[in-house]
Image (cartoon, rainbow, N blue to C red):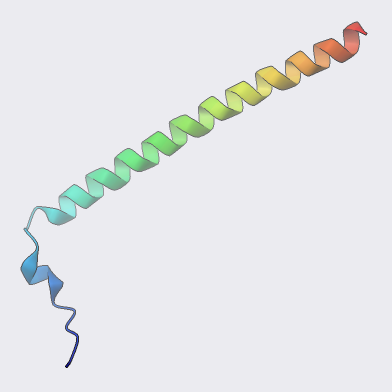
Length: 55
């Protein structure tokens, strides 16, 4: 039995647009998460530095 890769006939025409929208949302969410993590880390490092200087 030959496996066919003719899946495009089975999916709606709007499917590629949906996938692109999902990819964009995922990318934007990952960027926002990275920014939030970086912000928290910078605040942590400043806090640690302040503790070291004060003692």
